[in-house]
Length: 342
Image (cartoon, rainbow, N blue to C red; front, side, top):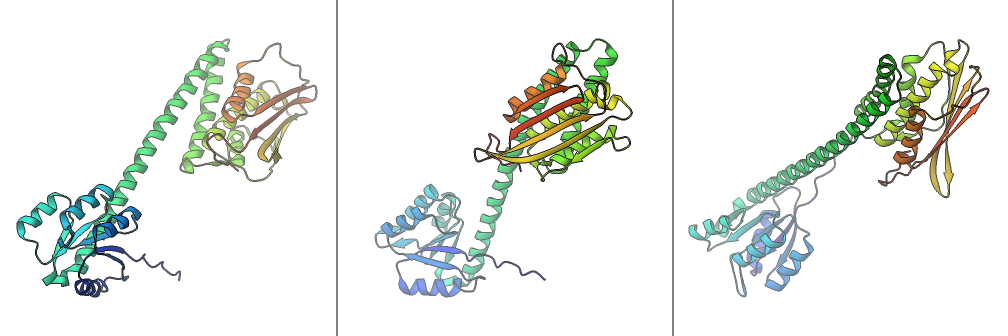
């Protein structure tokens, strides 16, 4: 049975000039579990110095001190550590003063004649402070997710619009337009689905490749020489998914997969170039029809090259060898956002 981690000890800043009162307060605070760490200060300079360190979870303050007063201490705390609970522990705090203290931001007050209330007051203040902190953290995380989602949706829509326009421009018939566009959008959808399965954190290169191959796998026509496990960030996963789709479509229409005996060999390695990790991916078509270089690059070729070059800072080399198309893709695994994706 795994051991549970003990909660951290609360850190309490105690502003109190009376040593006797401080000892009584400490005795009552010792009933809290775990027992708190108490830092006692008794003057304005030591209090201000303690505030600057911000190394405490709750402030306890007397209301009346020889060279200082509790309201001033409250104002300083509200200015420097507004999220830290502030509790008055005093023997002279009247009802009007208490109301004024609450208006200025005090969390609670405990009379020195009733210190038995102090542990519960401190624990309640700590619990409320933790709840506020968690709520702010959750709201901040939600804000970040909404901004990130908005950014990705805009980028995705821009990419979709570009693909729609360029596909239309390079399609001779409505049928070919629908076929080409459907394939490209399906590749994007598959990559998005894979990323959503991992909460949009990363996707394995092998999984991205297998998603692209799955609709076309017939009789083990793909030879995958899987290299090391490579985790791709969303940008790289989308770019490679589109590249694989274009290579697959070309192989089915014109390349090795257009022949019954044709097949495709795919492999990758992780290399070090100038101390930086790079992915080198090799696509080779075998036993297909004789290949001739096209008179001009189509949109599929342009899409592959631009995706790798501009999205991943990499490079693509296409070799229209007579024995079959060869495509080499290389890009750094350290992306511009600082994330290592392998």
